[in-house]
Image 1 (spheres, one colour):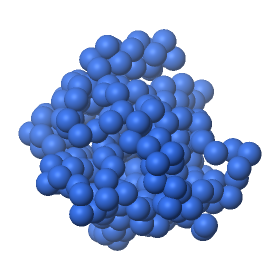
Image 2: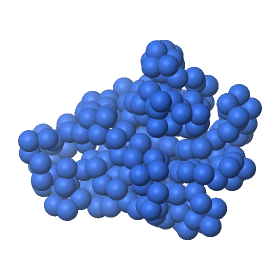
Image 3: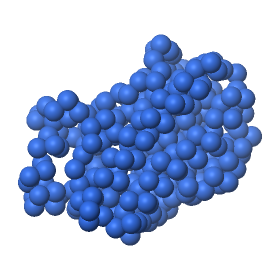
Amino acid sequence: MGQFDGQVVYITGIARGQGRNHAIRFAREGAAIVGLDIAGPVADHTTYPAATAEDLEETVRLVEEAGGKILARQGDIRDLAFQEQLVADGVQQFGRLDHVIANAGILTWGLTWELSEAQFTDVLDVNVTGTWKTLRATIPALLAGERRSQSIVIVSSVAGLKAMPVQASYSASKFALTGMAQTVAKELAPHRIRVNSIHPYAVDTPMGVGDSSAMRVFTEMGEYTRYFISMMDDYPVATLDDISDAVLYLMSPQSRAITGMQMPIDMGNSKV
């Protein structure tokens, strides 16, 4: 028996990293997965490796290996029609929708006055507009359900609690997601649907630890590194399971009294 037996979880950005780990963890707990990933380059200014179609195929294999059912497609969260069709097909295949994890996002680096127009607008378009389109596509299906223990988790960042230097577009996008989560929590509370945001710091993903521009900030722009330190020198990078543990908790009955919360998983960085 799994904690989420018979339930259906919609996850964006499932090809690898946090999204893949969430999919596997929920599958182990009995949930069916509906997910998407662009599985390719998003912007030419990102400086970490892009996910691939092969990564997405591997997620499907791992979810099925864990005993789960999955409907996964390659697509862009900025495409509302694509997401609406995926939701409709997921509900048709699995009969319902219970939870949404708005996980997909991108990051770019640069001083505010040196960012290109694309570096600013692409990040806002993916992280903010794309997340809104995820909510726009999925909330009607949640509202059409049985209203038992439905929930949404929006993946913001520590940069959505504490503005970070050299990340103007990313910080702006993640603060926007913090506000969006609070708005939607208030709108959906009368419908018994809980909405929370999580706020990771460094996570062991290609975007989290494989970004060459991030390394440059720490090696060549030492005047800014004081804003990136955490309290836990013994535990500088969160594991994927650290993040999934928080998401599973926020979607479980054990968190039934929690909505509109900003949960940091940041080794104390937001308090430094």
